[in-house]
Amino acid sequence: MRCQAKPALRRLARLGMMILGGLAMAGLAGAEPRHGIAMYGEPALPPDFVSLPQANPDAPQGGSFRWGEAGGFDSLNPFITRGRPATGISTLVVETLLGRNYDEPFSLYGLLAESVDTDESRSYVEFTLREEARFSDGSPVTVEDVIWSFEILGTQGNARYAAAWAKIASVEQTGPRSVRFTFNAQDRELPLILGLRPVLKKAQWEGKDFTESTLEAPIGSGPYLVDKMEPGVFISFRKNPDWWGKDLPFNRGLWNLEEIRYDYFTNAQAIFEAFKAGHLSAYRETNAAKWLTNYDFPAVQSGAVVKDEIPHRRPSGIEGLAFNTRKPIFADWRVREALILSFNFEFINQTLNAGLLPRIPSYYGNSMLAMAPGQPATGREAELLAPFAADLPPGTIEGYALPVSDGSPTNRRNIRAAAKLLEDAGWTVGDDGILRNAAGEPFAFEILLSNGQDDLAAAGAIWIEALKSLGIQARVSMVDDAQYKERTNAYNFDMTHYIRSLSLSPGNEQLLYWGRAGVTETGSRNWPGIDSPAAEALIAAMVGAKDSAEFEAATRALDRVLTAGRYVIPIWYSDVSRLAHRADLKYSDHVPLYGDWLGFMPDIWWQEQ
Image (cartoon, rainbow, N blue to C red; front, side, top):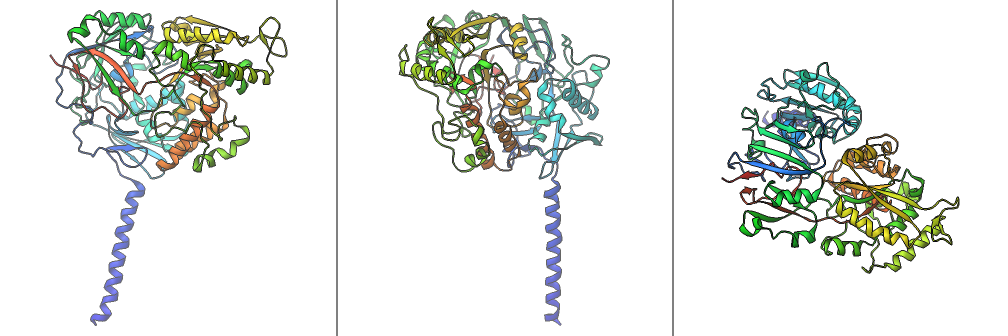
């Protein structure tokens, strides 16, 4: 009897284990509302975290911070294409469903939303709003506000919002404070992208044209209110005493200052002079040589101003002079390589920066996502590039590195190599010393810069002299901020200053930077006109990657395509940020992964009285 009972008990036990296991798996498959979400794996901070690691939860409150900006502004709506928006609206006045921790590559935690829910394939995302979330006028943040905000941004807002909205198949309110977005495309980043969308108050915009720039401040739920402003001159924000989110763990130690103000100046030199005179709280020095020589003014000598060098572990990004490849003159990679060869970086860097700044080696240089300069692609990188091998410029797969000069002003070896490439591309120097194509058209172009870009103008002047030895006629044109924006939005330039800061978690925004749609669609960030099926396929591989190894391989392969495409003449970058600031302004000893970047200044700073 007992022997007969044992198999039955064992079968019953096995059945119970199967049921429990099935329930557990069902819970994993359907997921559960969580306090945060990461691109890969789990967020680093537990549900009961006290504050972000780079924030000081005991920081004193009060004080002020004043920053200088070059240019001007004529709009308080930063979410549309029109107008020049004032600095600070997006970060100080408006909030998002989730907030980013800049001490992790890409993890988000509940802000307006108390939880986020998605499945293993990330075919949907559901957010549940905090019951206490309020706009600055005291009204609750509702599901209706969220849905309206996402739709208006996706259909009438800046182009950067459209791609994500197009991937939403349906939206439904699933509870009094819950909303679910179901997707029509495979994109593992979408739940995080939507978590970072600004939430606006629907009622404020009823009967108004959202696409028109305006000086009416948006009603947001963020820590600050627009206090005072003079268009194009300054804008001041004051802490909202009734800010609903001041006690959230995510916000502890953030937004400690009572007033944050941005003053506008014509150029960087004017900003620096205002800082020296004590009118500004901090100044970010981008010129390493000036950092050594220009900071002996009285406030530094007395200790009222201190100098800090803040390290970071983020990618170098890309900065330099971008070719507009929509122009026939720059369509041939050989021409672009010739001009890169003629740009004597070593001599220019020594002249302007005392040789202290390294050159940007690739778009993701200074990080684990970077290609190996000069080395061939191997393993998964090579596999991802193989289908496009026939159409990729030389060096993409075999290995490409930027040319190096001997540092002398003449740069003879590289100039000879440049002349040979230009000849191969059909350009010849006539008896008059002018380089011309087969149609007799001279090789001439304009370098478009905005007022205040003095270092680049100086670099351009040195380069223009070198170009004369090749028979090339170039000139620098400096225009005001409004004209610069108008021309770059319409791609009305030959060459211009180009800067794209890149993170350790690249994703869908890469299509806005280098996607083929930007070749013809105005207002994108693809100023060089990059038209590369390989780049688009690799961005899709990055976004669709389910583990970090696949993601890193796809990003390194993309780095190869962009760098070897010779779309930009890269200049310098810094692996530290050089900040001079008032001595009474402090920040935590825990420097975040991204260093002095988004989420750092003035977000986590405080003033000691």
